[in-house]
Every structure is written in structure tokens, then in C-alpha cells.
Length: 327
Image 1 (cartoon, one colour):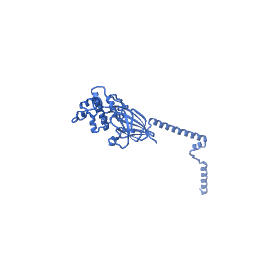
Image 2 (tube, helix red, strand yellow):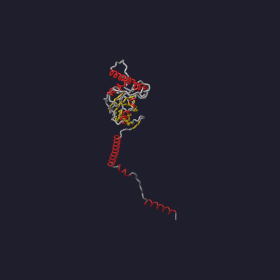
Image 3 (tube, rainbow, N blue to C red):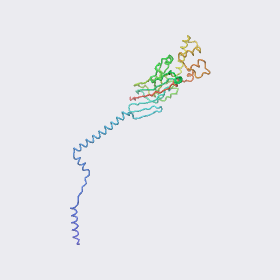
Image 4 (cartoon, rainbow, N blue to C red):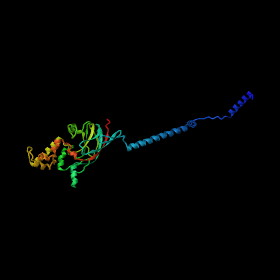
């Protein structure tokens, strides 16, 4: 075939191809572009999105508030003394179980001067476990009743006399008490024994508080640790001497003796039962008859200041609500 004819045939083929070709155009996001070109549709979309966001926000807020109402505290801690603290931004709620046989039990609960405390307590205590055991064994009505955190007003003549020597004199026996002790002072140290066993009008009386069943909106004067005890007699050297002297004065009066006269041993033993009713000395091997029946001489010799606490039994659940000092 001639070359010219072949070229013409190819040109005719290319022309036919052009006429028979299909043109395809791909346009992405056509629907979105169509929507955006219509301001009414755009407005509806914006409003719908706004409603969805607000609905989600309100739902999350409702869930958060509900959880806060049921469980309002952000953190729970337990200290070395067993006190459980639930904390939030404004206040703490602390739970602690107190053994009533413990004289000035360290709760480990820290407070700052100016804190506002509301303290509530519940439970029962018994003032003399040996009496409890004896009465149960002999199947008689208990001489000493189980009492609550408000304590018990005693009417027995012996208890009235002894009541002058309680931590809070002449207030209910075995009622709950509290004091604030500065940090760093150990309970068995000389500083604690000398300064924090009983209130001292010249020193620390503002740190001692009568609690009972409830004490509301109690402002704390000084920073420190909360210690608790029941209202009984701490056998300090001063208390022991004063109790012995007061008992002797009553016996001398009964025997019509002057202050210079010595008390006969048998007379002391007899009349002691009518007044303070001190118990026997634990060691009677080398003591005089009078000393054998006077537990106080033993407590004095060994400095056993918590003797009348060690025979207590019972426990109080103490709840402390603390509003932190923000000043």
C-alpha cells in the first residue's frame, strides 16, 4: 500500500476515535459544595451541631453532679493510727475508732489553728472490767453500767468525792474528752506527762475540750494532733497526794481527831470504805496494815498515772468534720 494512503487512513482513524470517545469528569464533595451553596441548609447544620454539643455538655454535667452528691470526696486516706479521712476542696470527714481504756489516745488527726470542727461520737464504755467480770460470775446486776459518750452522772458518795479529781471536775464520768497536742510530742515523754495529762490553768487549758455525744462548730485555738480520753481520774502525783489528804481529813473528822493526831490503822481501814474507798495495795508482804489497804501508795511509788483507765473497756466511733481554716 502506498505510504500516503496509509497516513490518510491513520488520520481518519484518529478522527473517528475522537468522535466516539467518552469524557468522564470526577467531582469530589459535590453534595457538600451543594449544601454550602445554600445558606438555609448551612444554618440548619450549625443549629443541629450546637444542640448536640449543648446536650452532651448538659449530660456530662448531670453525671458529674450526681456522682458528687453520692460520693462528694476526691480522696480517701488512712493514717498510721487507723483514722480514715475523706477529703474534698472545702472540708474533711474523718472516722476513727477510739479505745476507751486508752488515756489520751493519739488519733493522728492533724488540725490547724482556726479550723472549725464538728465532732460526733457513739458507742459504749464500762468503767471497771474487774467489776464487770465479778458481777457476771456471781450473776448479779452490774454495779457499773455501760454508758455512752455523754458519760454518767454518779450519785454514790464515793464517786462524788472522787469526781473532784476527774480531768473535767464534777462533769459526767466517762464522757468523751479531746485535747490538741503539738506535733512532735510523744505521749510517753516527760513533756507530755508534765503538761498534757490534765488541764493547767496557767498553760494549756484552752487546748482541752469536753465533747460528749456531739460538739458543733468548735474553733480550734492551736495547731496540733487530736488526742482523746474519757473523763476519769488521772493519778498524777498532785492528785494522789490530794486524794489521800482529803480522805484522811474526813476520817479524822469521823474519829474526832485533830490534824496533828495520827489515825489508828484499824480506824483508817474502816472509815476509808465510807469515803474514798481506796483498794488494796498489790504487794502486802512488807507493808503496814494501813498501807496494805491503800492502792494509792502503790500508784505513787511506781508513777502509775493511768491505773484507773487500764481497767476500762469499750469503744467509741468518732466522726470529725473539719472545715479548713482559709484565712
